[in-house]
Image (tube, rainbow, N blue to C red):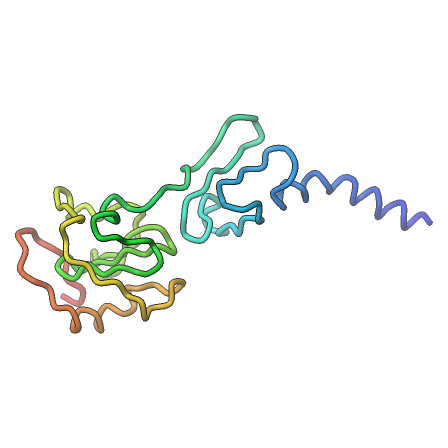
Length: 167
């Protein structure tokens, strides 16, 4: 009987925490969609399946992190719907919708950033040549396939200096 009361007492204390973790109760943020519990990236609690989400602090009305963004600015020009990785062959970088950012070569290694690489300042990616990578699983880092795609879709000459992997 005492054990039963102890368990009930523990559950009563934990219920508010469990309710908010399940997306129920006060402070529920539906930014991650459909009332399902958010699967949070341990390295960055503001990332849900590669996309930024609203994160509520203990203070009502105060949020940390970024609000989940829509498609990248160049996406509408290409009719892109964020269901596949994208390779920009002329600029030799990838857009990764799973992580919500860009993979590009810098200082002898692949770098990931949620923003467009700095060397592309002033480039209209809406007019850039792209290749949708339907055969790369969404949860896989697309840069692992660079050698394959750089051969399949050779870069065309452009007017800016682009870091080239392997050089």
